[in-house]
Length: 137
Image 1 (tube, helix red, strand yellow):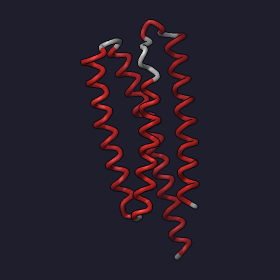
Image 2 (image 1 turned 90 degrees about the vertical axis):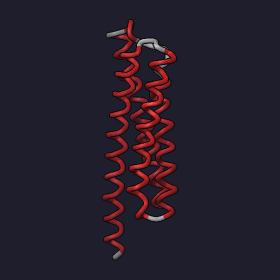
Image 3 (image 1 turned 30 degrees about the vertical axis):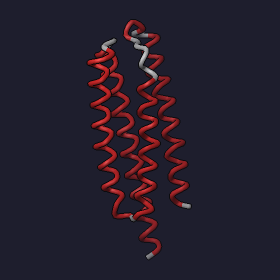
Image 4 (image 1 turned 135 degrees about the vertical axis):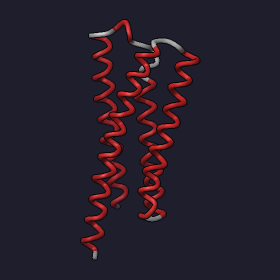
């Protein structure tokens, strides 16, 4: 039950932050720098949203395996996100080549925003989990 509640809360917060950040960045592009807008912009928040869903799925799986696996799962997900992000940036830079600086800047903004969100969420979860364990003992 606890895991289901955490998953629902994560997905709700992930969706909210994704929509808010996407809207905010889209408004900045359209109002202030429309000449820098690139057609691949919607792919960036979708990439990070899908990775967030993958992240919570890995997290749920490792929670079922045992609590000692959670920290390692977190680190593996962060490393995987970094590697996939590097591949996306390299692919875009060499294959698509349209507004590369705008793409990289936007991508890095979303990368760090979602990194902060996921880290904050994981730390809050760990704190609640330890509190639950202490209350059971």
